[in-house]
Image 1: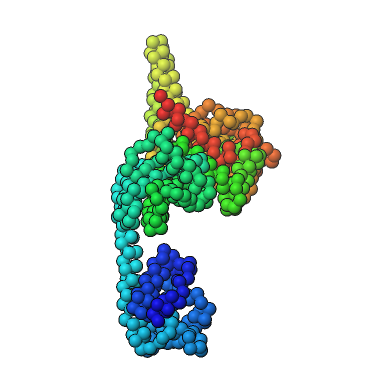
Image 2: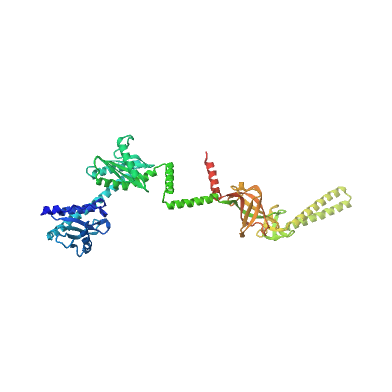
Length: 582
């Protein structure tokens, strides 16, 4: 009977792994459990698994079992941990036994076994007792995952500790080969070779247990052919004794790992190699890229940029490039007027300076800067008390000299007359000099105009030296524009060039002028060295006051926006380079 049941037991249906079974772990655990049930005398046709997500799910393949499995697993709960159902109503129907099981991460899942007749309490007890084997298999699966992750992290630590990309790649390839040899039985003769793809061609880089390789070696030529095929097809390539996997980056192969083994390469070995490549190769690639020379970086970057522009997709890059090209075209091709900006001061065309006539003290100041004056108007007075005393003294000396002259003439003494006449003449000269100083002690305006400088109201009684400037008066019927042009721009300024200015007092109104004279007089204003440039008004002369300031722009020609905005920076860079040049 047992032989008949075993003979009638269908072979396990081949089905693609699902969820956690992508590497056969969950499916393998279920199959191992099913085989143990069969060995204990329970004919288990199939097993299903329903976890909390799709990663832990395995379905029945037979339609009848599938139909009964859906409602059955809904009946399993903490209050009802075991649920039974039949696949159909016939006497030969399979019994579905469902119960809960714990996943390695602590979550609950439902497992179901489809058991063929006969059905009795002993069969149910055997199924429930065998769940320990399934639980142990799931925990072993988790342990295998953790152990593999630990090996990967350990290997990655050795790779990162190396000083260069090639040394790191050599360390990685050696440890990966050792891991695969120790992990899978029969892989003792496994050898690995890593090829770097440059210009769509694989180039040998490192190999396991080998520091260098001869280009003409037969093994290397065969490995190169396998690597080239995998890179061209952009997928894994396998043939007798050989296996190659391309490493992709943005749809392009950047490296190829080639494995060589006398005999068939086991799936477990390929699993180890894929995991190692997935973890370590991106690090090696970035390391390899970082060690390239600057010219190589520039060439590769240019090629990568060209690929993005020449191939389909990359709309963001193409839109950005179009925007940059449009901006550059506007900056280079759009004509604009080139202007030189300078500070402006308004000056009267006719200006006179009033100086102190002699050394003395300020007695009175009657005007201040900004006031209009007329010719002959008193501007200030100097202290004349000492002059009046001196005048009285010299007048007395003159009267004495006159008396001496009269007495000498009465005495008819020719010598005395001559001496007295000389004293009289000297006294009259002193009186005339004092009278002239007294006349000049009153400072008067030499012309009609505006007082530009000279505020003496705060210096009444203060001393003043002879010849010191006291006032500056500018005519109010004619003005000129004076610009302070920085020395970096002075070579572009010529007489006759037009310009615009705006005054601080009239910031919303522009006025035109024309350059009349570029002087060679340099001066420093606001820490900027520059030259004095004079200009004349064009059109009606506005009502202005000398001393008003503003900003002027001299039109020096036509140019483009890029030149206008970068000229000062380029000139500074040229000067610095010339200064650094030996």
